[in-house]
Image 1 (spheres, rainbow, N blue to C red):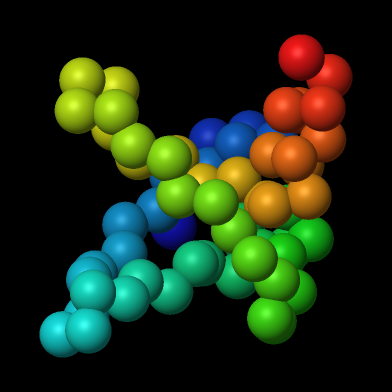
Image 2: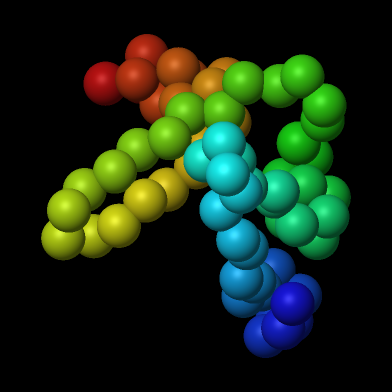
Length: 64
């Protein structure tokens, strides 16, 4: 884990045999991700993969 600034970081994770990853504790703390919460996985072949808390995602969609 490399902290680049107070509000940013870079981390590497490995994909396990079941396709699972562990979200680094720094990310869980920064984004207040708790056990059992639902995350949205978004993907774009050119731009990559992003994770977003489901409540934040639905809030953004309501604003449209």
